[in-house]
Image (tube, rainbow, N blue to C red; front, side):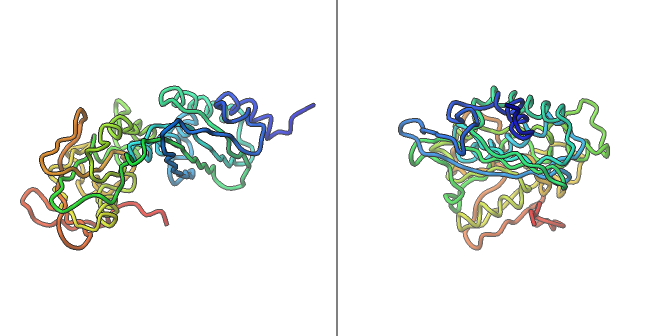
Length: 305
């Protein structure tokens, strides 16, 4: 019996990505038994062509970015990856070779990060390519990192570098010199800080990933924790020292971990930088320059609406 086009596409490209609980992608839903003594951690992110990635980006990087931005949410909770569900809305006439390259990229990251697809949905659309992924992770009961634990006096830290995402977008558009492709790669293939998230269990008092801009995401952390923060812009590790600081700290797409620690508690075994502290009072962010003066920013970060 000949398979309908949708099921034929799934069998060719997505069945090889399926884990045991996916039931060969032949049922209405998957079956999943969490590891003994672990809580499930779930997160979901969507990406739309022309908004979250460039329409002419290589297909093998688009799927990997989709997976990695969701893995970053697990990292921010200190969780370990388990599996994922994916919905893909393909524009009419999408070439089979494009889907093959997309799936091949997903296979690379499944192998690297140790998870598999459980199911999802594949549809067509007259609009732009639209993707959604729901990721599942696990963590020991009570060990998940949260946004709401920072307290006045806690130190503010960030992993890696800030600003690579916005610089990478400019490089991918041909607006910025990027001889070795470093910035464009950081935009297309962010690194989920899973090892760092694990290392922060029991140490960080609050944590989240930087997706919408350092300043804006710090504001989210402050609101959840019910305190303010001072961000020292001169201490932020930047992707380019000669770029506009305000643009880099509000640009987004960095997927580094932003976290709080008790005073004098240095995070172990990771590249992280102390960039400020939390304060009493309203949940607002004060950004200061090298002279300790407040900075005026044209915006706080990226808005989804």
